[in-house]
Length: 427
Ligand SMILES: Cc1cc2nc3c(=O)[nH]c(=O)nc-3n(C[C@H](O)[C@H](O)[C@H](O)COP(=O)(O)OP(=O)(O)OC[C@H]3O[C@@H](n4cnc5c(N)ncnc54)[C@H](O)[C@@H]3O)c2cc1C
Image (cartoon, rainbow, N blue to C red; front, side):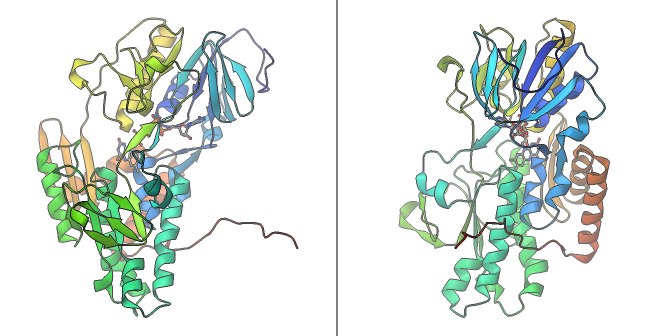
């Protein structure tokens, strides 16, 4: 097969990794200076730190601080290669992938493509809801929130103002909780200073969750405390309330109730992206790929899936699959690297280091092995853990400076509305 990627020709076995997220990047790093030729492919040329998307969306940090060019990581390692391209198809019998830039053969294939937003089949929510699964979507959210206020100040119609200023967040997981808390803090400390002519009693923040509690992946205590913190910040939280429909203006709720808001932020579900060529029996209902305890697609030679897209189906401790979090992705990559390098088969065993979620300034919840706590200490721990997890010293420094500045000034300085350039049609 023609090699369409301008890769060095040698006798090294080739490991093709699709996706430069937490899982793919960790695996590539573990294979530095190994006897393999490692080719990482991603449709973007940067790694994105998803846990801080909500701060980009609420003008807290620059998008560039949570993005890291993949090539910079690969610079000094001659066996690592990056190609910006999109995986379209795999042929596991002939052992090659087909990408938007042509085919490439592999000896080992590792799928680490993560997940995307799940609208559960609702065309309207997909059309009008605002997702936050990529840096571009987080920037879009920031622009939508800011431009709504720019429009609200141009009208003196109270209903129109209320619709433009109000925000509906759907999904009471960590992302929904963190987003609604951050928006509530903008309402309290920042926006009234920018828009003194607006009446902020018209700005409502609603959080809707279909189940009976917040933070389902964490302890009941953490969920209850998050609810308490959000109420303190003035967020109207509605549990056991699935959204029925949304038309861009009107949110339809159970029992024929309605709310009006121009911005509905959808954080209620994820699903795996379908990949052509992976046989149907591997696809689970959640869109995840079924793998064994070695992260291998059983029966397919040297094809693996790691991270959010994968689901180990035979771990009795995690019957519905491991949680879709960064630590699982990183630990699976670590285990797979060891297996590929040593040629042995060590089963993946997840070491749960605990979970954290932040709601606002001095308000966070922590479930650590053997201890649960909340408040100021949990918040500082959240800041520290996230700062240390960011890729790149420069990014870490800029985020630290941003956080320190916002902590003392109770302000964010990044409320800029930069729209993508669209070329005007020539006349
Ligand atoms: C808003 C938000 C907040 C989160 N907060 C936390 C948190 O606080 N703590 C935590 O532990 N986890 C958190 N998570 C989850 C965490 O980010 C994921 O578990 C983690 O990113 C999974 O890593 P991954 O490598 O499997 O996938 P990802 O990191 O999603 O990486 C997948 C990569 O694959 C690329 N890709 C996808 N399809 C293709 C294709 N066809 N061709 C080429 N490239 C492709 C994508 O561009 C992407 O770079 C959060 C997630 C989100 C969205």
